[in-house]
Length: 309
Ligand code: G3H
Ligand code: 13P
Ligand code: ZN
Image (cartoon, rainbow, N blue to C red; front, side, top):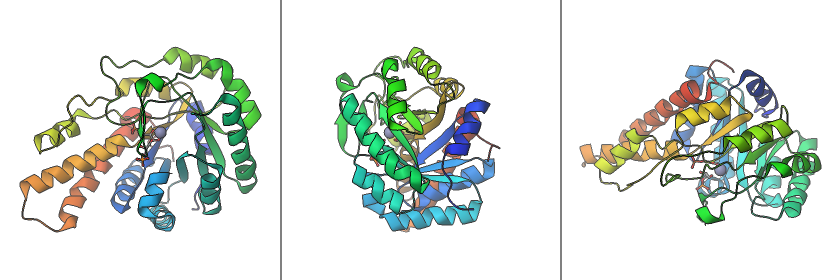
């Protein structure tokens, strides 16, 4: 099976009231953990690569790892550029075989964001690649760029129809209070479901994307803290809120931090329990297993996309 776009996945997810998981990949163990989980749960999958991941692992290595995962799983897998920050980066990923790209102009004035997204769509669509854009701005850290909470902006539902019509994008990421990283809420977790509902009303049937959707699972934060790490106050999006969003217009839910935490926790545990070990396989195998366990949990209990491949 070749790589697929998100077109069919999103159509079915919207109609079925569930969401597709978009998991970030950086190396072989992460690709294997995610895709083995999806295979066991027979789930469609989006694997996404940030520009930082592409710099770290190299485009060709990531392509080949994902191609290997398709051979091993025979699942519908979409390969997506996460937070593309320029036309040139999107073009390079499109030319290099990705089936989906995100152009993130969310920091730009509305008209500039529209012009940039339109330019990417005009290049992507004739090449059968789909495009995600973002309206509104999330707080948090991406690729070393930190957006402070006071600079985060909720999406304005009044802008979404104009944005989608003028750009021709295939999906839209919106800001309703989630943020990137492991410290999402200082006090009580709160998402603006009223904005999501209004966006859904303005764009009937149109797939919405939620970034910054890790739940920062306490099991792994506790393990990190127990084995020499220091992550006091880490907090994520409660899973019942994500399930609610998946039942609304949200068709794609982005998860990276939960995988990083699981991987880090198990590596710390391995080092603490066997300080003499210097065989990377002995600490990477449990880390890969933990990623698999987290992804299975997300597919079944949060996204509801198990048995939908
Ligand atoms: O939203 C950002 C993702 O978690 C990717 O993070 O840019 O550090 O690879 P990264
Ligand atoms: P988290 O940091 O919540 O995992 O968000 C990931 C993300 O949005 C990737 O684009
Ligand atoms: Zn993101």
